[in-house]
Length: 150
Figure 1 (tube, rainbow, N blue to C red):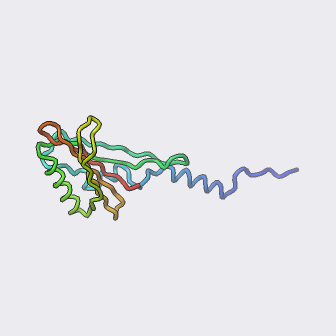
Figure 2: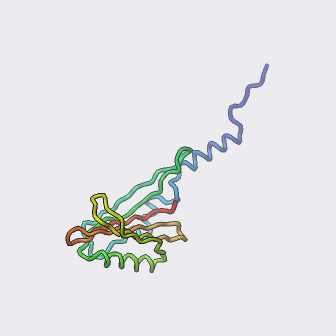
Figure 3: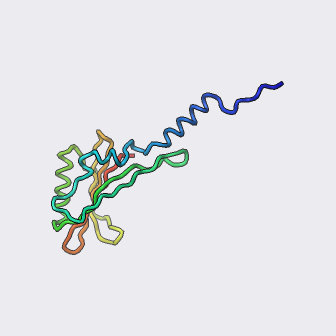
């Protein structure tokens, strides 16, 4: 009588297990709760109003997709100018060891307002930070995004 064939060898079971386990991790290794432990996650311009926290928990990768990193940030409004907001964030982040990597004054919001974007990285922690500012009437609105580098 023929010996039954094993459908999976030990090696393929190990490979499938690793694939499933690695597919459960959000890329970058940070989840929203971990990002909230960083002081930059709560950074807002002094005196800002209408402050909201925005979170995206990310999505784990799998064999079809690499997933998406977790993101947290703030959105707010101030009566101060864009230049004052940009200077505050630039000085605060530089003092915390962040390096500015990009400045773009050609961005636009979904509502069509012209915006300024500045990006920073903190390579020692594999993190990225984005600030977008725009003017609506007499106010400056902005949002921040803190995430892991992909």
